Image 1: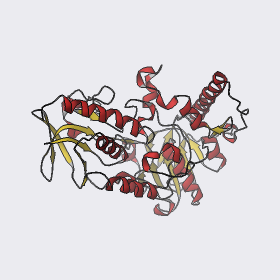
Image 2: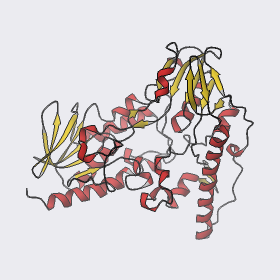
Image 3: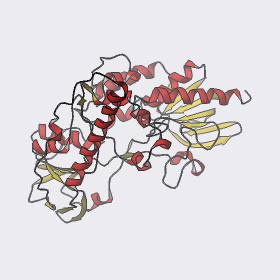
Image 4: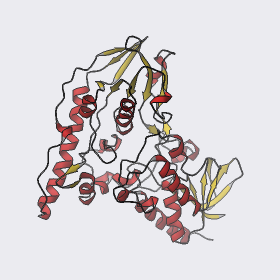
Length: 400
């Protein structure tokens, strides 16, 4: 029996490993594929992190204003994994109680541990709406996870569904590749890249925005919202995409043969992005006022400029020569292997902050695990330290 088993060798699992090692906890990291596999298999060719190097210190030293490519992230994950006790190609299929610890069932034999850290994440299983099954067979369909670039798709226009982080960046990628793009939008916030002389995200971190906890939110529904839009090193918005030639449409609500029907939510979706941007600026302005900082006034932002909207109520796929649809409709996580006692009716882990209801089990890398930043690299090291402290305390209270 080992002290602790970490399940998942992505950035969160490797952060857990480093924190456990620093506390002298004997552990192993079990990874069903290769370390950082979702970063290899589920990123498009032109992908870059939309967070700067100073937010991703987990990945090692890098320029403060660097925006790593997908392949660079993989290389850095591989270097981290080389320094950790990672066993690749070991898929955990079930977790069972075993006396004072747990048995992790795998195809290569059981692993028994006194404590378990689940770091498989909740953003690696592609989600596609049922509407996809109604599209004509001639239309090629992709998800964010399988999209690589414009050259991968058949000729013709492309319908991109979903305008959160991935949808907006993939729409840009397709336009840069010479494709005509129809973007079915959704209500997603956007972060102004620059405000009052600094990157807005830098201000927001300083203001405590990233450390907001679920229990402190006046509106808990915020936890289910998509991450606000921010491109690598610059701003991004629905109006900017429209000015670049993207046709903005509402949410698809029906498919009838070759015709896709949209609702009339485009104006509201643009407004949702603008409203979040205004709240972000107001938070920065309040921080500047409260601290008496000598910050320059706000500069004009091109993404605030209005755009004329004439969204289609429907789209004839054949008439508009649409050859492909890219579903940028998000990801989920598979937690069925945990067993019914650890998973709620919605399929998500039951927990209080990082702790499962069963003693000796913790989570890492979930959105809003303890704070707003828990689901991104900025938050992994802090949450990993908290979980590793809890693991060490748990082990100290158990017989060897």
